[in-house]
Image (cartoon, rainbow, N blue to C red; front, top):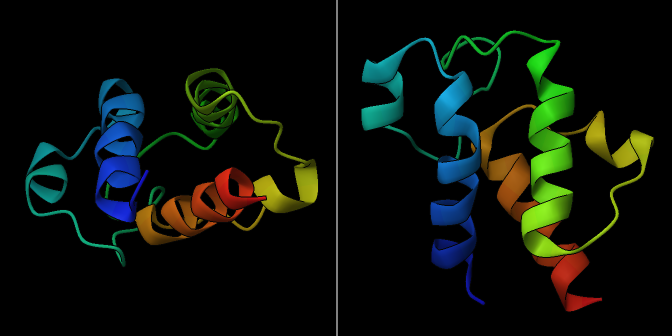
Amino acid sequence: MNKDDIQARVLDIIRPYVKNEQALANVTADTTMLGDLQINSARLVDIILGFEDVFEIEIEDEDADKVNSVGDAVQLLSEKLAA
């Protein structure tokens, strides 16, 4: 699975939690979850659980804490899937 495929799945997972649809429409790797997409910080847990379910991986708390942007999520998932 390449990074474009991973990003498409990431966007599908976060879409229900996004409050700024305009930012989602123009998403880049640098788009932040809390700031740009205006995702409630409590919902980040749901998103991480979604990543684990969809990609069938386990994400440790310290790794989850590093996911601030769409690019961070894609990079983390790429690393987990390659391992």
